[in-house]
Image (tube, rainbow, N blue to C red):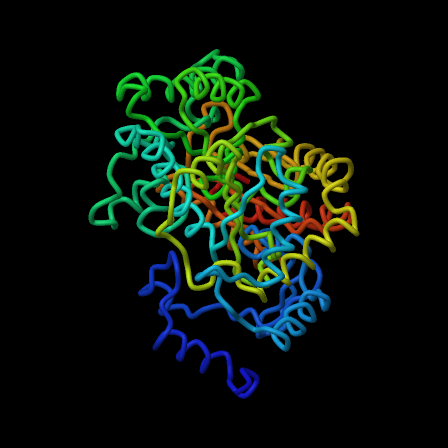
Length: 459
């Protein structure tokens, strides 16, 4: 059945009648109807009405290699013909996850040599929680099971993932979070720094909120700290340079494991394969997904550091955990080809030495002075634009988040897909963007800001 046999209105009616969307007010959506994205190529997506939209979010932080990659489709097809599926249970394996594990160990930080597969970042973070608590139990410290996370963090939407995350609106709908997870302040200096406080000092203070939580619980009861190197879905919150070194000092001092969530930052976005390498972070687990396959297939990979792996293997016996699709042979075949493309085309190096610096320079120069922009910040090909009513006081428009939605809607109308998170506009484009693409995006953002500012009475 081809969608081309249906009108947009018919597709919207079917969508409204049967399809529940993630993170959606369904009553609101059904009043206006879904935008139907029907095809994509390179850095662009196209809707059912023929509108070309530059994708500033790489799908959902994931299409690093861009759209229309025939090689990825062929890799899936060839694997499906040979072996479409077999599980990794019962002492069985298949070649593609074996070869992918070898490749990931080659590009990952040096202490990461074991990989556990799932189908999403949420699943991978569930696994990480299980692994960390199991590790301490095997080491004879079962009470050492508290996890420290951060407010505004996002670690997935399963019950465990949402519990690890620090988004209060998600917690309100859980009806009971996973116990023994606490949340401390995030390293978000734009809103949380005190008057006159330097970035360095703020970073130290934010890190020491983790130490305070350890001391409050007792180090003998704290298993791990979990954090995104750069907080993504919470608004691309980039920590001061002082933050992660202090976090590492604290974790080592109290023998607390460090769980790193690189579901967004992994596979080249920061100009290294992983943000851990770009930012000098030594973790015990690293959660990855999304760009592992450039979103062409669902796949996650949890890297497990040598310290934990040795204990799990030598002392653990059977690990009662896993998924039907762990190490799915088709998804792993696509991941192998995707990593080959990223490597062959030098996309990671390009982000580090060319497009990342140009992205930063262009957004800073063209957007920082805008009357409703309070701050522009970037790392690699990750960017955030703070929307404010007053540049000096950083006062926000009311109701909260309403101004950013206006900017987002104008941006899409101008042909650029952006995301609004609270009062922050965020960008996470495919790594195939060039300087020319960045210029196009910046011009469309400027126009969207102008139109939103006019709506808000600021132009």
